[in-house]
Amino acid sequence: MTDTLDTPENARPFARIAQLESWLEKHHADRNGLWLKIAKRDSGVESVSWAEVVDSVLCFGWIDGQRKSLDAVYYLQRITPRRRRSAWSLINVEKVEALTEAGRMRAAGLAEVEAARADGRWAAAYPPQSRATVPDDLTAALDADEPARVFFDRLSRSDRFLVLLRLMTATTPDVRAARLQKAVASMAAGRKVR
Image (cartoon, rainbow, N blue to C red):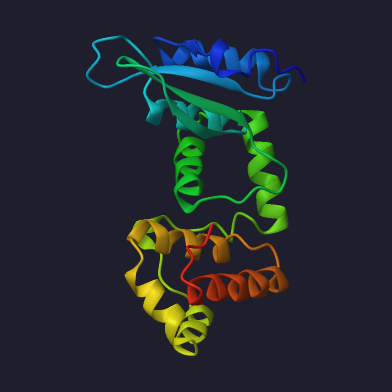
């Protein structure tokens, strides 16, 4: 794989999603990633949208990643091949199911799905913030540590979700237990979980 195009300075604009899909068809297996220049909604510039990009990259076994501000017209969005053993979000699982039904998935994307199904990542997909609930093990740990409970209860929705996400994406019970212990200790000390 080469990565000479995978820098923000070399970001590419695509006016239509078919152009990005053509690029992915040619390069999904030989690039480490690509920075896209996506026009902001009210810019008046013809551009792919973030939602279109997400659907298209999933079809090829890629994923959207880091986003950066650029200027008044564009922002930058990095897309990359999905990393081996990376966690799946329930939103992307649902998107892939719809894309499969629509006949849009490509061989590379289907291979990523099959790998995730085979190793359990598909079934363990984490929910979005709007559907995430505090798990029993975290509730019990917070109930046993008053300073951590008070700190957790005062966190913003986004910061609470970061705590939950660290637990939901743990790959083994031991990793989850270690993350839980570390999170509770951080919150008891008045520090956000990162």
